[in-house]
Image (cartoon, rainbow, N blue to C red; front, side, top):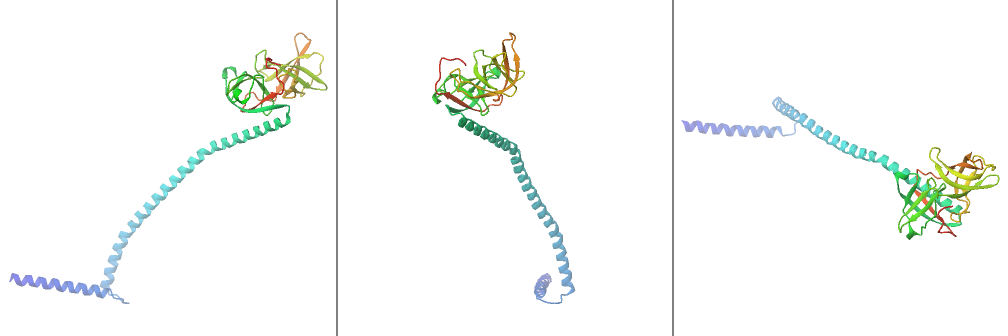
Length: 285
């Protein structure tokens, strides 16, 4: 009896498998009409697929969106870094443009003043304790720089060399308070008038042109150049323009306030001038 039921179950299982295979094969045929059971099965399967597909697509889209956001963030970070560098680049361009213009002016000035040779140099330091007194430049004896050579900017006379080493030199500015720092100058008025640039008024930012005769008529705006009479500086180097005349205490002479062409604050590039005939023992003009 048990053997019979076992065989019966086996036969039922085989018949079921055969029917299932037959149904599958039947359903796989290309037919226009589909039976309702097949429709039901397909609908159930399709609904299940849609339930699985919707969150799957959502997760996939979410992952893609996260990647896009990450890529956008990375690009924005790079662009921000480049924007942060923009002011620096703009500043460097402005500095280069300014330096280029200054060098052009220096070269033009060199063409205008032909009675001396010149050496180009750059300011390397300035003593804050003696701001109006001295600066250091990157050219020295090995470049042909000598004591008492005139120093100019693109605008006008700045000072003179007071000592040198093989690679560097110290320049005393016209604004120095050193009483030996004298420059022989001429005023281009109706007639040429002469005096000595000696001293600097820090309050009014003017050079002091002293020892002008009391009866000399000089007006505001008259040009002041080097006279060349001291034997050190070449003649005709531009110094500045007259601002006003002030009578001295003794009443015998006058002092002219001269607004300098050179800027004693903002200095980068200079021109070292050598006159053809120099008296090396001179301390000033």
